[in-house]
Image 1 (cartoon, one colour):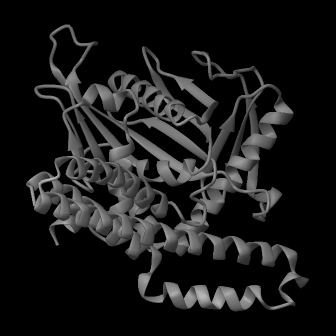
Image 2 (cartoon, rainbow, N blue to C red):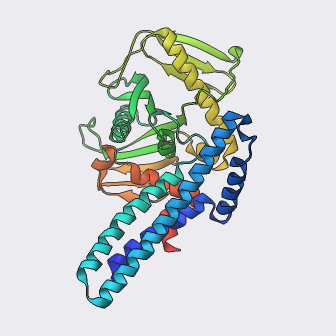
Image 3 (cartoon, helix red, strand yellow):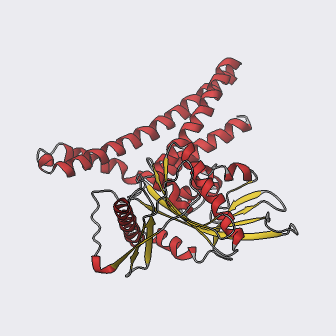
Length: 374
């Protein structure tokens, strides 16, 4: 078999292996039998909410099993067609099967990513915060570049973006910004972006044209669903109002009635600067509950908790990703070692390969590249 077909085949088999890992292949059929037994139980609908959850979970498992089996069958069928076509000298059959394999590779990769987004809050909308770190004006400018990068990424996915709050830099850029990004799996995709992001470039603010290093921290947490009950003791919070300011723009609503809520037990501070003070209080309280919910998720999930603890201050030694524009072009994730020389594409929002690599690593305990090498 030609090297190209073997490479495509290996890619598809890797996607199938990661799908099986996510599915819990060894127990999947047993779990389906349990679901089928529960669905046939006439008392199931005595609790409609629970019954709907059981039906959704069962259907999700059925869909995942069917997807895996379909991809596996298509792979076997097309490889068999290639062998037959080559044996009979039928180049048309071989070409058709090769084209089908290439399409199957894309389908398998897409299903692999979908399977990774099944965490408790992955499907939720998300809040994203950006804060300039060490580097003064340089880092404030870097924060504005990061904000643009994430807005562009969200727009490419058809997500809506709302600016919740923004603090301008003293000379350029922004000191901080908070966004709400709405769309299916918004949190699941963006959660891997939490951490410190490092930029190396020739400074546009340095007349000597020297290379500078800047840092910003990014923090991502899910928007809490209405059916999740998070209690906030009024005595634990302080609510302040202040005059907001920002650069404005297509996605931005700013007013003079911004609200800041401080949660004393955790030190969490959330802000909002929407259309009215009443609306701002509501938005900020939802953001606070989301942050508290994220803390609870962290306690349940050791991997997420370790990542949060490791994030550290926005400075040397704590970065998760480096964006190098000088003396060469490279963006490299320090967790997965995924990298690209297309720095312009990344800063224009082409972040999916980095997110996918981190999601795959979190599931399997190793990078996708390592999985392919096994």
